[in-house]
Amino acid sequence: MTVFDDAPLAVATAGAPDVMARVATKVLGPIEALPVDERALLLDTLEAWFDGGGSAEEAAKQLYVHPNTVRTRLRRIAERTGRSLTDPRGITELALALRAVRQTPRPPTSESTDDTRRP
Image (tube, rainbow, N blue to C red; front, side, top):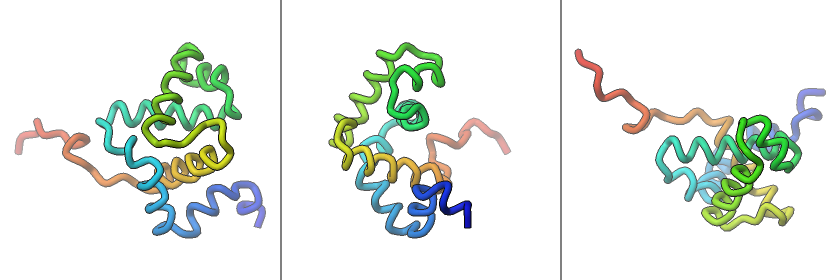
């Protein structure tokens, strides 16, 4: 079962989807409540930061922005969620919640549907 050994975070979130949905809501609820574009910007930045090993410089390269832009967005995430990106517990909670959000398909919302379509 090499698949499980290679991605323990993915396994943890997939193994208990109901629990992880509650964790995601608890941890990322303040970000999930933002408008679609702002929410996507912050979650993409957080994901790039994790993918870059916690480096604002690496995340900035992935996102094609200045490292200070990444730091500003990370501060907004920390302020909104109440989780510190320097505390192992806060980082772990954010990582689990982000993985749960990314693994769970998002139902369409009025913001994401095209209301201009005509019959």
